[in-house]
Length: 266
Image 1 (cartoon, rainbow, N blue to C red):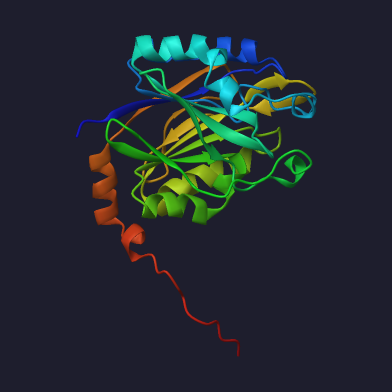
Image 2 (image 1 turned 135 degrees about the horizontal axis):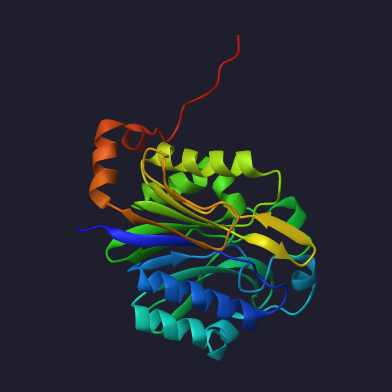
């Protein structure tokens, strides 16, 4: 199996302006397509903006996102033969969630995943999802993750145990979070001997600032490509053969124990 060229994209989002953010997403997708990328990952809540002013207002529904609202992004995905994973705040029928939207080259749009670990600051608006999710691109299975999910080793482990060769994380980190951001996602890569594609929101959005740091990590946790706070794409190739070779050399993936038994104290 040949490698899969991926990009972690980052840019500013406009709080509460779906149309403007779709336009920016389409621009990044066009650039990714021009570079031969097959999968583009965009930040957490990128389509709505990550800000209280957006979260307090009306949010898009799955029906709106699978309709005409994403047509500009859908058209670029079709022309570029590109899969796009983007974050959005979402109004489901009975609850609000932070979710992943998947746009495929055939025009299909789905919203298959809701963030399972909701940060305390987000709980006034959002509820946690109740299931994990992976997608497959060119035969490569990849787990979906949104920001705080990646702080929990068991979340990435569940994706790897189910067959994922990589972990796609849409995120939004505030200033001061650089150390934890860079540590968490490299750790998730080396723990599971798989790739991590991290996309971070950058610039101003409403009342807040974000620090970007989008990167692609290899199965040893080394950054193959990384951005600072500028708009752009971190592009790298995911090689399934390297995942297999790394797992043969370092046995954590196969040697993981389902239980460590009782804990004795003496």
